[in-house]
Amino acid sequence: MPDLEPKATHGMVVVGEETVYLSHMPMFMAPHAFQYLLEVTLQSAAGDARQLYVDDRRTTGTAVYTLAPEPFRISDLIAPEGQRPKLTSFTGTLFRGHFERGGVEILDPVTVEVQDIVHFHPFDHHASRPAALNYLAFGKGKELFLAHRITKAPDFDHHIAVRPVPGATGTVLTDDLLREGPRLEITGRADRPEDRLHESDQVTVRFLEGGPADVDLQLTVGREIYEEEGDLATEIHIH
Image (cartoon, rainbow, N blue to C red):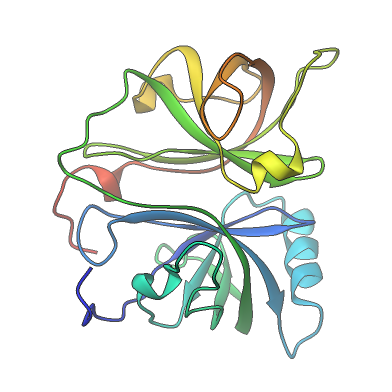
């Protein structure tokens, strides 16, 4: 990435309650051509920012919450192994709904403290689309989520809650594994929007990266949090 990469507003989907995650809302154009997941904490002069957000989510029942941050360089999230990135804190505005599509402002400003970079990859227009549906797993404790792993246009962004199938044995989605954002393959589904996971689906998944290759997991799909195809329909998109 060029040293003089311009600063830009990189909108993010807000996921989780006990632990808060921010997922970049990407496009296949510079400087937005990256998928990343951040574990964060939220602070606000208005009070306990995380609790204010959780209370609003539970009261309204809204699925989509987004953050419009101050402009920054995505390259500032990149750091050598074992080191902290240059960007560890930034401010933004928290919205109920999509911040560019009629969302309602609920906290401004809110300070975001980056605790961990769960997943980070740049898009490569030479990449090959996987044959089977791929997701990234993340979360902590009883809050488990999947985010569709984005590869090349046309593609889709998708975030869902999941839980182990009751009675299933050998579940290995531990906090330690989830901290690394393991890549999972969904058995029997193609990597396309029409085959994405839906609420109440029960699926078999296996690790492609970040977990034991010989283990199959049984998961039940919970609530759909966010789904977007238009921003990822082509290599060139005007925001």
